[in-house]
Structure formats: structure tokens, C-alpha cells
Image (cartoon, one colour):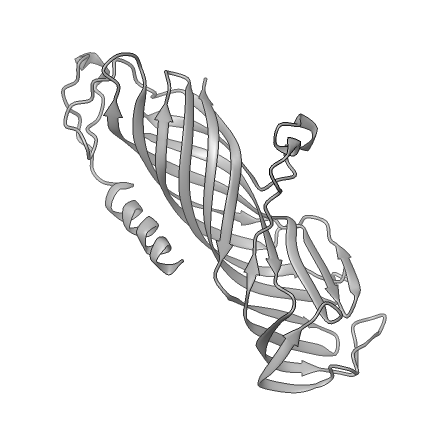
Length: 296
């Protein structure tokens, strides 16, 4: 995963905001910019000033992360916790309009500020599930009775320092499955890489940077007490992406991309006792998404 993250970041660093002086094109009045792949752009139209949107689905993977849970009578950190995504099995769900938002989806709405630059608002609906059972290191303390109203924690009470600890379902289940949502604003750059000899089809590389808020709906059971919490702004994140965009004509396109991101969640809801019990976590992820889009 680290190699893929480095690949995406390096692509963004070398291309996303490189200087692109104007060049001569087939239609010089369009003043289409240079691509890093081509000195002359043969397109006879520009995307500048147009709106677009896309919708599609994703898979994601996560780096191990430390998970801190704290409240009345306890404050402990589970270290290097392993987690995975939860993609919906291929089914009619993906084409049923009433259930389109159940799988891990991506929606973006954007505007081309130049032919080769756009700015977009996006909602990446990923899912994050802590693996159980797994053995991790734990540091912190757990009293015999925790939270309020009291939860019996006597089976796990004690002071821990980098001790081996098995996360079992009767102790903790933890997931952002409705979901691990990243609401972002992103800036994208496009470099034409290939054009069909006839027609308006072409292929472009897209790179971009983003930042935004993490709005999870977190489902937690701590010692079998908890709930599927309501959505809340739990933190913030930054991201970088690179991918390929196939334009079939002036309007329709298909895109496949890799996005890597880092998030800081300092206000995670857990048992539903929001004034008492909370969690904190920093999550790094790699997301692979495929979308179909339309330029208005």
C-alpha cells in the first residue's frame, strides 16, 4: 500500500500543478493548453466554463491505525488496528435507483475553470470495519465500572502498557459503515494523452489535490453497549489522486482513479452517550474508484 500511495503522490506532485503555457492548436482561437504528453492539442472544442458531474463506486484499503477510546472510568489506545472495507456484492443494488447509495459510492459535481483545470465538490462514501477477532497492543486503563449509566468492565479492568490484547466481539465492534464519508473540495488538472483520428473521443490523465471534512456514521458496541450513531463531523482530511478519463464525446466520460488520503478524526461517537464516551483515530486510506460522468 505504501508503494501505491507514493506513486499517486508523485504523479500529483509532478503534474497536478505544473506550468502549462498556451500552444498552437488546430483551432488557434480556442487557445487550448499544452499537455505533458502533447505539444499540440487537436481537439476543436474547449471544456472551459462547463459544469460536470460523475457517479460511481469504490474499493478502499486502510493502513493500520491507533484507536483511542475514552470516557468515564477508561482511557485506552488499541495500537496498529487492522481494518478493511465492506463492498456490496454485485447485485441489482447497483442499478436500483432506490438503493444506489448503499454500496461504496462516489459523487462529484464540478466546474472547468480552464480547459485543463476544474474545481469540484465531492462525497466519497467509503466503509471502514475493524477486524474481529485480532490481537493488538493496548496502553491505558479500564476501571471495573465504566461510562454512565455504568457498564460492567470487570473482565477487562486493569492498567495496560503495550500489552497484548485480543479484540473480541464481546469487548468491541467498531465500524464506519454508513459510512466513512469524505466531503471534499478538490482541484483537478487534465493532460490529454490520446485522441481518436476521427470523432471526439480522447483520453486524458487527471491529477488532483483535495481537502475536506470526515462525516461518518459510526456503529460501535463497547462491552455490548452502543448504537449505530447519527452522522456527525468527526474530523478532517486531505487527499491526492491520479487517474485516467476517457471522453467518448463532448459530454460523456468514463473514469478510473486512485486516491490516497489522510484523515484526523478527533470526535467519533461510540456508545451514543455523546457527552461521556468518545473515540479518536487517524486513518490513512487508498481508494480505487470507477465512475461514469457527464459534462453539461
